[in-house]
Length: 107
Length: 122
Image (cartoon, rainbow over all chains, first blue to last red; front, side):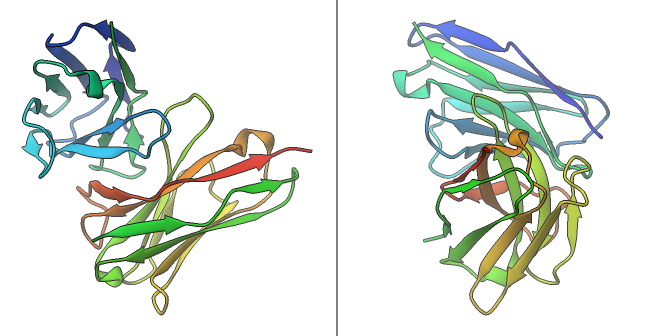
């Protein structure tokens, strides 16, 4: 099973700051890494696919990068509505796995 | 528009079974797979398994293997997840989520149901 680790676990930031979340895989997953946002009491929402590909309707301040084992989700100029938990997910091998999540709070 | 609408909340006793449904609309049901993902209270996302709506192929996480069955009914565009021998640690919000392909490799989960809360309590 491929283990995904995320850092940090929690981040409290002020609006307009830049947020960087990392996701590390226990073995190479090429670019089969996707990012989701989950706001309180809502279902997860797809943010980024294949490590860096944008999703229609997702604000351009969200971007992703990386390949192999190291990946990054960046939120440029954080807005209040971005307060949420963020999860990475790999689909390179079964079983699918998710990272433990990063909670982003707005100061 | 694509929608996944799940069945309502369930309360079950330990040892019982639960069957959660996920009715799809707005797309060709048999052209995509469905994953089931659960989230225990205050915890992260846990993948349980997937089913191909094209041919019924399945793969389950080891943690629930032997207790779970995922199926589809193409006549009603509905996916089902049945979990047996329920335990208190099965208490969670259960989501269905659509794959972007009929298979699993490289798939991302582009649409999610609203979640079904399953509570296991004596």
